[in-house]
Length: 148
Image (spheres, rainbow, N blue to C red):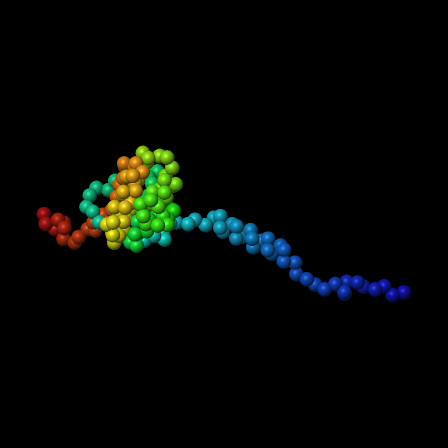
C-alpha cells in the first residue's frame, strides 16, 4: 500500500500581512515622534536696533511677517494679506484673551505697509501690549575698545 505525501503539493508563499503591520507601526511611530519647527522654515532677518534686550513673556502671541509680506500667527498662516483675513486668523489663534502680550517679528526686508497692516489688525482686535522684535547691532571693530 502506497501512502501519498500531500506536502509536495503545497506551494510556498510569503505572508505579507505581518510585514505590512510592522511598516505601518514604524510609520506611525515616526509621524508621532517627529517635531515640526516653524521657525526653521521661516528665515527672518530682524531689523537691527541698539538697546537693552528684554525677555518676551512665555505665553506671548507670536505674529511673523516674512520678506514677502506673508503673515504667520503662531504656526498658522493667514491665507490673504488683507486686514480682515489677518484679524480672523489672530482671533482664531488668540481666543478671547486681549490682555495677552504680542511679539511682532517682521523681516528687515518687509515692506513697511505689511508691518502697519499687522499693527492695525492687532489694534482693531484690542491688543495693547505689542512688542516688535529686533536683533542687536553687531559689535564694530575699533568701538571704544582701544580709545581709552
